[in-house]
Length: 132
Image (cartoon, rainbow, N blue to C red; front, side):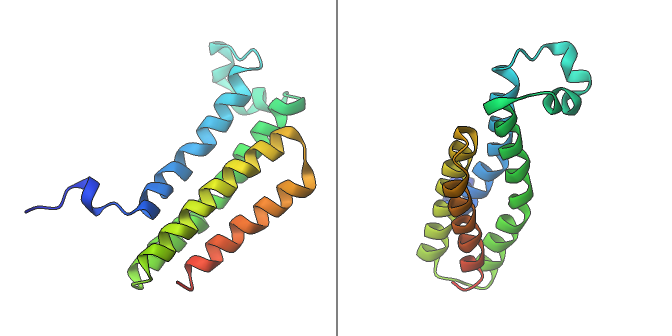
């Protein structure tokens, strides 16, 4: 029997896909709640740079989330290649995703100290993947 995508994708690999989509959701939240119009899509970065308040923070959360994806992706792939414990890999990957969601919510709500804690715990999950 040939393996299918559903049988070969671990929870951690699904988390990589979720991580890739998360910045788009944050950018959409920033854009489409602030009066973004199709003409603004000619220069979306300039438009996003004009935002203020929670929409600006949603954009900043989007940027930080993009920055964290490469390390997370590498850690998941390396953990799998090294034959790490699958339950541990999945738990750390899911924890990373949950923490990134919490991070985004705290960033948008402007709760800086807890946001930093969520960020640090997310980084700890990435580091932990290297030691599973």
